[in-house]
Length: 339
Image 1 (cartoon, one colour):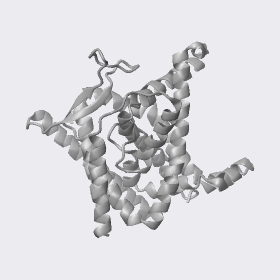
Image 2 (image 1 turned 60 degrees about the vertical axis):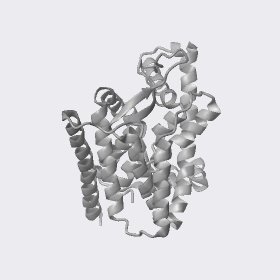
Image 3 (image 1 turned 90 degrees about the horizontal axis):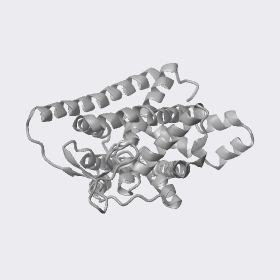
């Protein structure tokens, strides 16, 4: 599988990783949808499932080449490389556009999710009592999550570890937004803004030979939180992949119908026309993160009036749909060339 990958395949795997990383950071958007639509979801899940006892035996015995081949390491490595790069580049750009052109960014993501629903549903023909029930349950869970009220921030390391496990659901379960779940758990800013910025600042200071951060208790706390969150994410990613690989093998149709339901339900989270509700302190003032941005609490959704801004937003929805259709076309073309 790995040896047949061309340079173009490897390049596009990094691009897909960039897409997954950016999607995972945006509340309401699921990186798993990118994997599903781009046609590598099952390979992603089955590759992660290979991180098991046999893989660790190969690693600890020094059989690194066998270890890499066993876990489909080149595929996972390129994908995760794209995700890491995204967290320090593409996702930063997305953060900027969410602040300056929020309506149009949400509109494009809304369109991409509509396109994803079309893409997944068009090839799914096994509709029966079980799959319809699974679809409805998925929709209800997706909608229900979007209307929950968020908790308060909590930097207890056991809770941070739990947040890491839960947050990767967006990578393994299309339609479940890990970043939105972190908002509900109260730790989105702590884990995806403050701690990531602390790591960036630390890397920069090390490069210029400044090690004073060692004496900064706030920085050390944030780095410790990020390490624990990362360990929780890795644990969750491997655990979820084993569960999902089993379910996909034994209950594939019910699983896919539930995924379609999750994605449909997530439309409530990414509905473009919404008023942002910000967190308030006990004194009634806005709460701010380390970048000086107001901390989002939740959203109040509404039906838009027909005006030029709404028409532009609808155009961005259409653009989002076209992006997904273009990805589908590319995926089909690639599969035909590799056949």
